Image 1 (tube, rainbow, N blue to C red):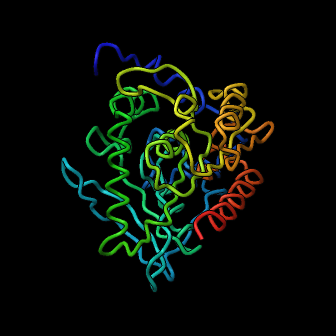
Image 2 (image 1 turned 90 degrees about the vertical axis):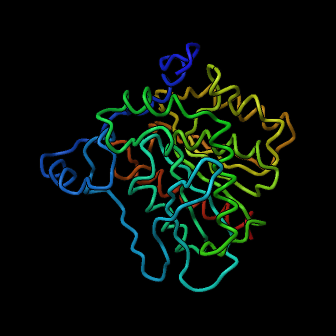
Image 3 (image 1 turned 45 degrees about the horizontal axis):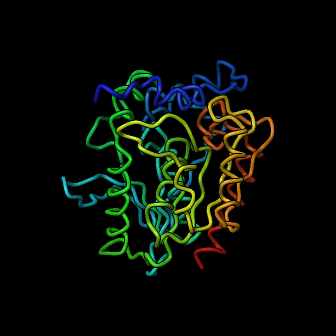
Length: 301
């Protein structure tokens, strides 16, 4: 890691956010989670089986693929309807824990709604978050080494894949959604790709320290964000202060992007959509997903 990058400067807000107030979990719930944790990062903690949503692949084509990049093949998970073609494309950007079962399930949910959804493994050059023992290790040894510029070009490569071969995607109807680390990426990719038509950012950092890997945050690139972006945030997120979200909301308005919207759910922690974690809040997660469906139905038609 370059000398000018300190994980504590870079990632404190994410680390804090990932320690939300827990829901009560009894022994039965804990053991159920422990029994089905295959496919989840160890650092994510015990899986909450009693709340986890599992979407089947009936009527879908889904699985792992390899996306060509300038430095080698990047693994990705995709899902789309089994029949038809020219599907609107939604890129799904991982949490810090990588492309685990929850992110794959999000892809399947989107495919059931008629989209080609694809989640690239954006850490593939730097390490495997599934085997890291704790959040701090993921942040320090993997996330802190992933430059924003690399993420942008890897998503570009994923978009190219989606428009070819098995993808059957219509990249003229391009959307993106992401969670936590991926929520920040949604805002950045909207600034990066003028061809993006829509995005939904779930509790992504919008401002903070910058460094060689992260030269700007979303609030510094607001003037370049032209697509309508829906932001979904928790009012009790310990790592993303409400006043920062308010500044992002105001900056969007000041830049003339009145098509974007940021929703803040009161008394709601970070990762409220993560149905496999204690931070899950079913009412807010369902409302957020309904908003996502309506947003993409309108903007990717």
